[in-house]
Length: 341
Image 1: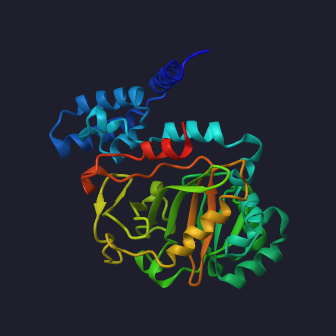
Image 2: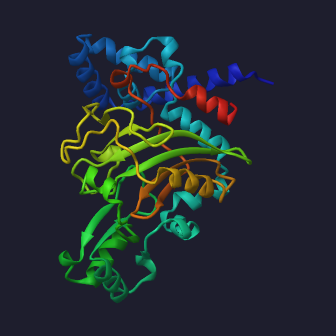
Image 3: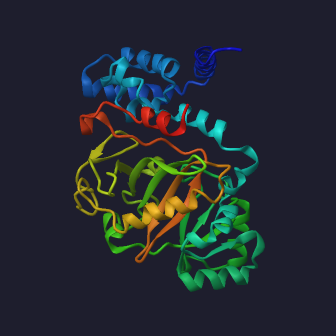
């Protein structure tokens, strides 16, 4: 039987050749040039190191930028969880027959209905009249593709902007935006961070069959858009064990914000309200589908309790940015300890 070292090497070799044949050259040039301007290192050397890191450490190009790999040595780099590594874990421990509860947002809101804190409607199962009644009741709704990620296909629509509900339903079906949701009412302290979006938490958990382990605690916030997703202009920072923002937030471009540019609120030191209830909620929902033990939970804070926005069985990775924190150790050792790989 092949050793774990051999299997790991084989996986990295396969990933290297897949990465080499699927290089996003535009992204490679953009990131290497930006890091070159910040460090005065030649962009070509940074680009070569990005490709090497993809093979050696299984880093995506955005991973390389987000966690300042250009500033890290080998001993630091090997401590970082990356998106490809996270994907390996998800594929290994999250059983395929049960992934649909998380991959399909319409199934998720039904299966976790007790914990979502909002009313929902499926456009496929509703008449134009029922959709009109729902929208008029809430005045503002979120429409979502049921099987997208990264914030794709999520929009906010207002009742005042919809004239023909038969046409509106046809648009939803055509765009596969089947799920219509009430906008989650936010706790005023969370809403103040960025008033245009629901500002949420990403809590990454692993359920070992007995105990729910917290692997990452993240505060996400929008920056003028209607969603707080990192890929759509949002930003994030890590939280302490008691729910306090530890550092400045940063966005997908790598730009850092100690003061939120819209609200003017100082991000380091921001205390998430009702955080003790957040931990209780995650401990509860993480046990509902034990066949999917590794999940990234998006949690909103409503005025009286935290609620679940969605669960991601193939969660993104969130870690502190070394240039903002001085901390050059990633979360891979914690993942190894709690998951046992």
